Image (cartoon, rainbow, N blue to C red; front, side):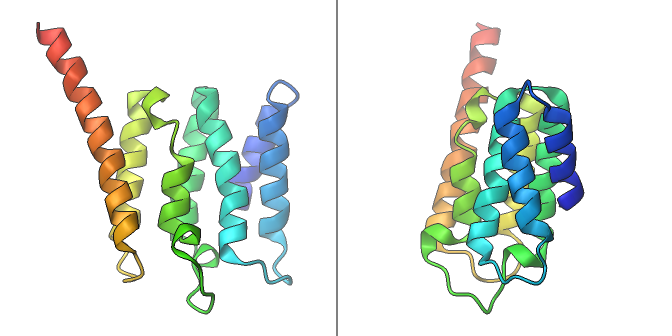
Length: 156
């Protein structure tokens, strides 16, 4: 995860200063192993960088951001069972809230993000709340209906 955040920060440069700052900040927090950072705080910091990167619509940032998102949902530091979180602080809800720009992203990244959402929802931890499942379904349906509308327009 740290390597992906470093890549985002270094590739962003001054042209994408907000991304560079967000990714550097997330990386600094992620590398602090001695300090106990609550998972929802670490996730929020990393998701900010991922969201900014995806919203640039630049291929190099979008690819790295989707890789970072997938790495995050697989990394145990981001979901510890010894920490109690509210429903909105859960990994699933934080990820879904960070993806609000998805309708504007390129289809290849939308598809990859939907795949990551499915992986996240089916991770087997048993900690996924009904609200998170509902939100994931809403995101998926919104993208499906948009794709179907475009397909219908092309056929007409």
